[in-house]
Length: 404
Image (cartoon, rainbow, N blue to C red; front, side, top):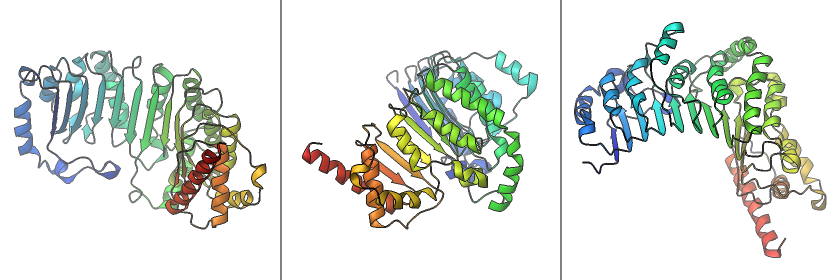
């Protein structure tokens, strides 16, 4: 089968929502299926020498990694171990100089060496020299830390996507973000998400008290250090996409400072920016630093001109106040801009349903004047923003019809 280019073996169930581990993974009920799938890939290089893409979701071992490591033309690997795996089980894969894209979903990682032992392991294994894309899905920032160190190529990676799950502020993956943004000069697309299950962990009041106590672990000095890495990558014109979703790191005025610095005019290559800080990761004082309609006006008039896609956590009190204010402003007095933003996401913690039709008209008119080529506006309050989106499109059509 020398002509085989793509192979997918996905016997086990995929990971669950919020990175839940399926019961069959824990019970080991995939063992029989694993015997068949491992038999198939034994001596894989003898029948799949030309394999370019390999997707595998089943138990993983050192032997399997060694087989994968023999596929000298493999450029894309998507690997999901459905059993407990050792940190070193993946080392055989690192022999592949041909790899360009790697996705690792490891929810049952065990035996993570620390300190000098970990450094010795990393020093003895090769770096994947031409890796462009790395995606890691892990249950915690600690597991992500090990997997990133194992697979990252700090000089070549252009796309990095990290997904983990935690309810706690003190487990923020500061090291990994600093490594991606502070060291990797090639990075163009960086996406890091926290998929914490809101139904697990302490109750909201208990979690807020604990996180407020632990917030001092990430001092403003550390937050400023991370922000400096972000802004450096934005201003050296490499970073085109930045997604930070429910990361418990920026607090207080640093939330506003991060948003303002990322949307400055000198970030001339940024096209996609998502910055969401859910309620569980905010202190009460953080609310006043969330995005407002004034931020949209600054962006349109004097901000990042290259931005095409924007999603921000908005202050929930700002929407009704501004909607009422905008409804009283004559059309001729609404500021106008030629900013090229195409999609806008209004993220809030809960649904807001109390906008009158007159207020929605005012908001839609305002957005149309600021972002005249806006293709979609959406929000958590789905019906409200669907109506606003429809109104924006009607204003665009009217402008096009009359040639404005």
